[in-house]
Amino acid sequence: MLTIFCFISLNEPPDNLTEALLFLSHFIGDIHQPLHVGFASDKGGNTIDVHWYRRKTVLHHVWDVSIIETSEERFYDSNVQDMIDAIQQNITGPWADQVQRWERCSYNDTACPDIYASEGIKAACAWAYKDVQEDSVLEDEYFLSRLPVVNWRLAQGGVRLAATLNRIFG
Image (cartoon, rainbow, N blue to C red; front, side):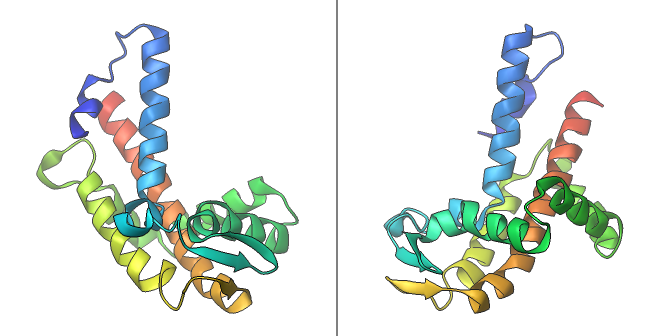
């Protein structure tokens, strides 16, 4: 999987470059969602039925969509750009001292999916799966305690995608 990054080149036909960039951005984004590196036995939370407030769903969907959409609706008047701006302000403000560490890869690798995945499984155990059983009702307590983790992982994913692209094209 890691070798795919070495083949992205400006000399590629535009369709190949576009496809490679789409894959790379999707991969780096996905690996930062904790349940994408969750347990195989429950397919990353896809077999754990829960209720997100009143809506029946699966735990994986809560982390893929529901926490983000609920945050967007409650705190940003359903304006995704305002939510993005808030995350960017955290990256350049309170989290600025973390950015260099997020950007860094060991052994001068182009990307570090092993590090990202390791962080993700720790977050899955500490936050996504914690206190969740089949048919749990996840409401404000779960949402408000997990939202900072989701925002942190979104920020890390964005910073790391930018750093990876800079290493490829820089």
